Image 1 (cartoon, rainbow, N blue to C red):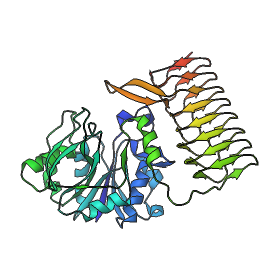
Image 2 (image 1 turned 180 degrees about the vertical axis):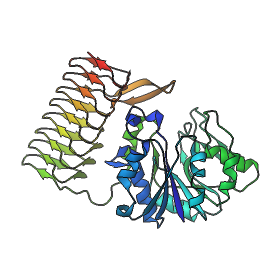
Image 3 (image 1 turned 180 degrees about the horizontal axis):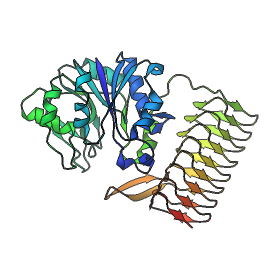
Length: 398
């Protein structure tokens, strides 16, 4: 059976991080979302993959290549204009000649979830999950195992049976796609296709999984996804740990990295290759630090994601934050965490996190980032400033 991975979208609600990469390439535990999807599929014998790419497709194609190193064969199909998931799936019709799996590349799934959808009864199956907060996703009404209604993103707080966006379809799905009505967002969505199939009396079933499924609707949701990824094997410490540095719990440290004297790391923590931490750095759960990151002395980082090539100065405190690749932060930076109201896509969302800083941002010393701060790509923040809310890309703050 072939699997189609939908990876063409930007993920606008995950801005500013998706200003420079597609959502499927956002990293949790130092690996892109889509790498977990591919790994779960390969582990269950699904090794022929068709990946639909579009926005910044080169980032995906360069990283995954032909898939050989992941034990799969990858074929790429381009969706030139992002017109929705139904339109994206229609692009692969000539590449699929039998039943197929459809998976969003920007969700986390594990082997259990893949096995559940593979073994479920029925030709057209939705992988579902029970959630207390399902209002931002498709919610299913199910009688027995049969789906009788699908309501896309009701928006209000509600518990229910959530549509994970993982499907198994018969080849007849390609006959249904052209009839998909346009959504309120001006796109052609698979949920609309499935709703039409249900109205026509076709048998669509739900399989509720106990396996891992996680998403990041907004950029700060990466923190929760990062903490939900299970350990894969025994964490490896391949870097150098100087005398006087202490590690507790599951800590992974890549080759060429050095943790200097007096540092204290409490796992789960993942540290990439060629990093330089300390001396006297504290890293607390559940933090991921990418490759070639440098963190100055007496800095504390907790429950955060620091992407490749970032630099954080001495005496800083970073809490519940995401710092983008190749960004630089001066000494005595404070990124506070707390509750805030954040404007995203003309809507306001209540959230609790510190700061989300995009790639290639330069931040001076003694900067205070209030809770709910988002900083766009290439911005420059002057020393001694306080910032909060949205800082648009390329902005200079003095």
